[in-house]
Image 1 (cartoon, rainbow, N blue to C red):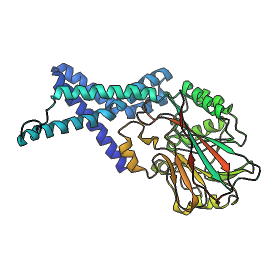
Image 2: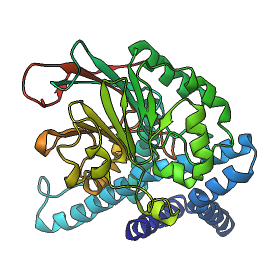
Image 3: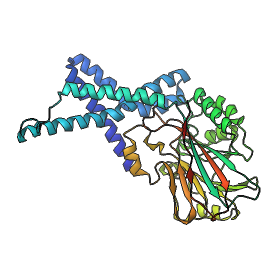
Amino acid sequence: MLIFFFIVVIYSTANYYFFSRLTSTAHLGTPATIVLGVLILFMTLSPVLIPLYNHRGSEKKAKIFSYAGYLWLAFLVPFFPLSLLLDLYNSVAHYSVLFGEAPWGLPPISRETSFFIALVLSIASIAFGYLEAKNIRVERLVMPTARLPGGTDRVRIAQISDLHLGVIVRDSTVKKVIGLIEKEKPDIIVSTGDLVDGITRHIDHLAPAFRKLEAPLGKYAVVGNHEVYGGLKNTERFIRDSGFVLLRGEGMTAGNTINIAGMDFLGGEARQHRMASSQEREEAILSRLPPGLFTVLLKHRSDVEDESLGLFDLQLSGHTHKGQIFPMNLATMFLFSYHSGFTRLSKGSAIYTSRGTGTAGPPVRFLSRPEVTIIDIIPTTGNRRETLGREDTCGIQ
């Protein structure tokens, strides 16, 4: 709750800061200033209004409103800190002249110039990030293990996470993701949460496309926080209609080859929706799985429970988006212990946190490209559990 309050305060301050900088730079008259103030107030409230409109508005209007509101949010993410940095520079430049002339004194930048520098760079970063969000990258990981049944040459897992299907992430993204996965021919496909962006009323037609995806050892999914936002009844139906086995605090063995367990998202949102109380402890679920097989644990948020270490080989998670839009990653890296990529844990366990496949809110990713992760689990005659190796990654155009 404290983090949410902090975000609201920062976002409101950023909107007011932009308003004050624009009016002081453009020297608008009173009528224009009032109109601008009302418009920015409306945009400030847009993150709250967008979900409400998606519940009730037409698909076309919801899409227009979402793009406008979320792109405004994406613009403020770089503009606010960049403007503050330029203000800080001007303050240092102002006081530096007290200690001598150039080269010791720093040349100040006018308020008008600093505003337009921040404006142009922010717009440029968002334009680049909009294109980057469409350029899904394939990350390849290799994990040697002695815990595959004899005669198994390889088990390939394709992981998607945080796709956020909704009025913005739509058919073209689904087509691209499906194409990438089909090309890799995985044995298992997993979704580590937030397959949908909370509301399913505009995306039911996408379920059959996912249902056509085939994986010999099955398709598995877990619940993320955005599945909770949209109401579990509807989001569960969509996930199952898409052909996934939804693992909600349970485990199973796929084809007598590999163990897979999945846990619900248990953050504050889950507690508010009263979905956390009935889930069995993670340690107990993992302990009942066949001990001789490689075990994959699916969890949306990249939290690791100490009691579970040694009971799973690889945890696959998402949720962080690696900040999605720079410089947000400078904040999210402090919020999550396992922010992005692979981390070796104790007792032979490991975790991989996906940057995410889609976008939450703004259809923008700046310095955090989306990914589909391909994990190859291969047999080895070495130690009972080996560390994770990394192959070269390749961009997908």
